Length: 102
Image (cartoon, rainbow, N blue to C red):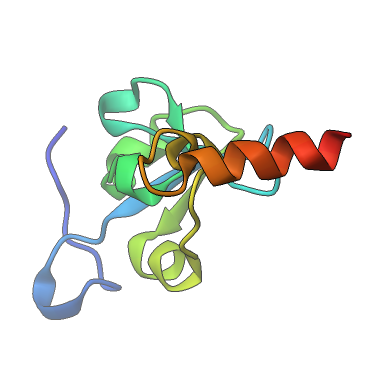
């Protein structure tokens, strides 16, 4: 779809949006459309950016969130499964989790 300029975008640039699937959340994280509408992602790093026209063509339960808003509210976090695979801390993480279950 062609991009369009909007009055909200600085210097005549195209305003871009992340598209939130408002039907559900994952834990306490938003569920964003991936690029080209190919599934969902929790991380903005994996989410797609869409023009207003593209976002308007999605489901009525999807919410176009301006890029600036989503990026301002984003937080960094570390996924536990990545720590399990780390050669430095993976063993300690696994041992700590086993101890917590005992």
